[in-house]
Length: 397
Image (cartoon, rainbow, N blue to C red; front, side, top):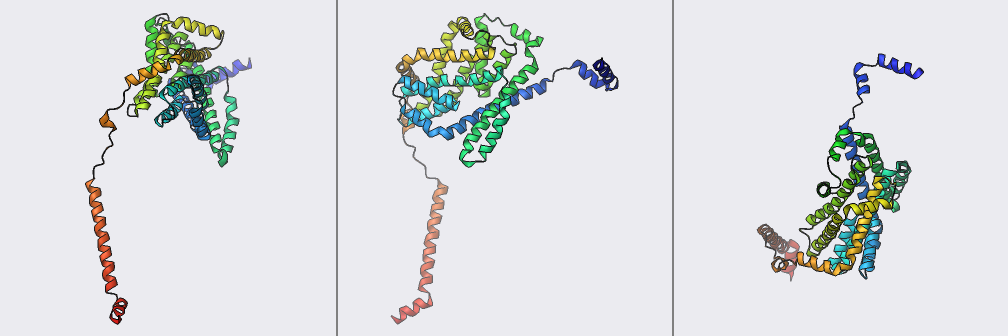
């Protein structure tokens, strides 16, 4: 009774435009878009800060691990998985591996096995993100920030403090993404539902279309984690069916390898071969997955019955990379031969040492410096000869 009287009084005394806004309660999509982009920025910055500072703290140990525990393809695969899970960056693992190959500390076959393990290790990122979408873990952020700031002012633990700061920022970005997705109510928006329902989930062309869309988005934003987060938002809200969401995840696997191959175009031959091996691994996996797509997705969903769709996405990402590695780990020598056939050694002309041309400006400056030196020596000699004390000594002699 009191609440109804109070609401009536508010309507009587509030301005008309305010009551109209209260009644319409139209969503502010501009603000939602800014919150979404800001949350993705926090997520990506947190992951980068974590990876960079963990490499500063344990970089030598991780490099030693890569250089020593790769006696065969299986230990190489396990090493790549552990290192990537630790640094949360398959790119960092690939870069370290390529540097060892260039230094002849690892063979290309060992590098391919490490890259296979890196694909498994990177799935930990999907599990962290799925936990952020499934549970409210932002309450742990504020004590983590306090601890991080305290360690950052302690010089001996500055890297650890920055690592904790990045982890807290990553969790904050996930929590903000989760809340933004819930506020947008995409699963209750008729236009969004009509758009995604217009695609037949059982059609092969729909799967292929969303696969290409995931690859293009990943190449555009240069981050598979960001596209994975967007996919989890759409699936968790009920707007995107799980089959289309998994097709996006498969496209992300291809998009991230295309980006690394484009970046390696001007790199050494070994770097280009490692990048191509990574792309071949994911392309082969997507090719056979398309043949058993719906059956494999149903199998993955049976592993986590009743779980949220974000967890299903993370489980598929893990099962896909595990199955692909289990198939290709036996064919590392063949993959190496294919890689060497596609990425050949550079031409002999490119290998010749480049003769440095003598820059006329540099030559002119050299002549000028020599002239000044000779003139300075001449003036020193003249001043020494004309010195009165030197004259008196010479005449007395």
